[in-house]
Length: 304
Image (cartoon, rainbow, N blue to C red):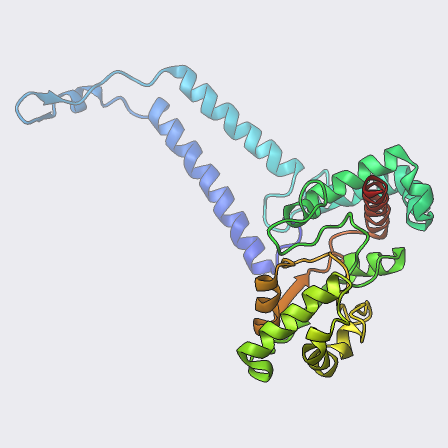
């Protein structure tokens, strides 16, 4: 209690604590060593036959309460509890946390600095580092991206496929984890109308299959160039700087069916990756980056 906000409140707590201890001591002493009024109590009768008991409280109760009070007084002398008095031992929870943090840094600080500066390829081959990275992922990331980093619910992307909306190199992934991302796909229903939405959705499906230059999609392709190419590129290759995903592949976050694509075009989409820079330190972020790179490498090898 050494960090009480004012002398007044610190003094008030001292008064309450000391007064309570004195009152409790007086009460216990009066019960066990006060005047014997058993005969007077026994003379009281309620409801014709109901009488007050006169059996005294067992003496071991007194010694139990007395011992507890002694322990309380000793505690208040040694540890904070009386207002702003820090206690003889000057113990505090904040000091314990600081000491633990200092001990941890002394023991593991050099290793953590090494990990934070290590190359991602080196960390990927370090089994102990990858076990630690998986633990970090399970605590902070698995709730959205799944325990295997495979994404889920049509809202959270698969982190194993090598397709990164904001760039998949180590620097970009670290920036995504630390600073978060906010993506916005504007709605185009009012600009395109129902028929236009269906036509552009058909063009995007064809584009993902490598048939975007088919003559039947020429008109929809022109609309795509006018409204969509500024973000997704003329060939639908995407733009990592804007967080605009590629549309000329078969990787989809909100579904690659024609109806799902049409829904995205008409109503737009918005997604947010929260920033973890305040929750995770540089070492943890570097470990996650290496662990995700290992998942991507494994998934790519399996696809082959």
